[in-house]
Amino acid sequence: MRIGILIVRVLVLMAATAAGFALAHGQGLHAPSNLFLGGAGFLAGVLVVLLEWQARRVPVDRLFWGAIGAMLGIVLGLGLGTALEAVVPGAGALGRGLFALLLGYLGATVTLHKRDELEDMSVKLFPKTAVRQEGDKILDTSVIIDGRIVDVCQTGFLAGTLLVPQFVLRELQQIADSADALKRNRGKRGFDVLQRLQRVPRVTVRIDEVDFPQVREVDRKLIELARATSGKIVTNDYNLNRVAELSGVSVLNINELANALKPVVLPGEPLHVHIVKEGKESNQGVAYLDDGTMVVVEHGKRLIGQTVDVTVTTIYQTAAGRMIFARQRDEGNAAR
Image (cartoon, rainbow, N blue to C red):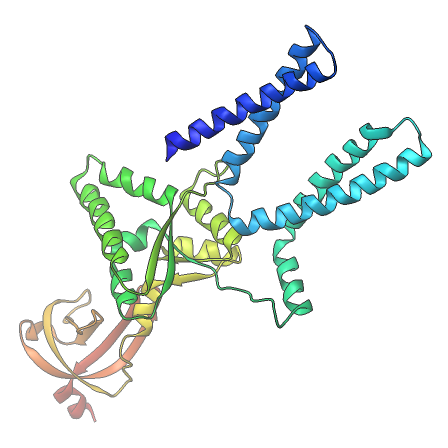
């Protein structure tokens, strides 16, 4: 694949250089003028190859709107150049080319910066034909290593295209190649999770080579990619979640989903728990529900290793999840 692309690029450079020399021959030019046009053709070929290489890293929707803006600018520039020629007879092709170049660049940059507004306007103008598609789900490194994304996709709650950027794969590779055994195992687990995701029905895993060379941090690259594709970031990273929300990017946080799916427990409800260790405060015992929620039992230190019936007294919701405080049911009845 890469060898074929390389061959095509070389042929483009050769064809552009040959076109420059052919143009010089057609004009009856000789050295060194023909060398100048041949070099200009070669430079034009280099420019085309650079544009093609950069275009592969840009999302399709940005290419579309950029092309629309550039074409409108070029048409307007040619019209203004023709009008200028009528006023200034010496302007000619130079004036038309200059106006087309400047307004084409201006049109492309304006449409790229106003892409979201243009899409919204197209939906309002053509409500029957304009369909605003939901963006892809962009996976970050933390959610891949965590692995619960596979279970969520298998249940059907998350379907469609899951986009894994190339820069996330590079970060995963660096973790897998780490000298630290724990990090190395986490990186290998991440690649195993991606292989499991590729086997899940109704889910398409797509590796995207889009990059943002001017941005160094992976989190910032994810935010820029989500903006460019109108996608949503899927993550477990609390800090990335907050930064993305402040940047106007939608986020799907697996931890928040897990907390939302935990059974609702209200004060006064009975629980049957097994006390496993001592709490931080004096005479407290600690137990855990099946979903991992911590239950702090007052005066439960003496009950460590026992399974007891308790009554919920207080529930605290924190960023890390829920914490339930309870007391032994016999004590609660005695207090009443």
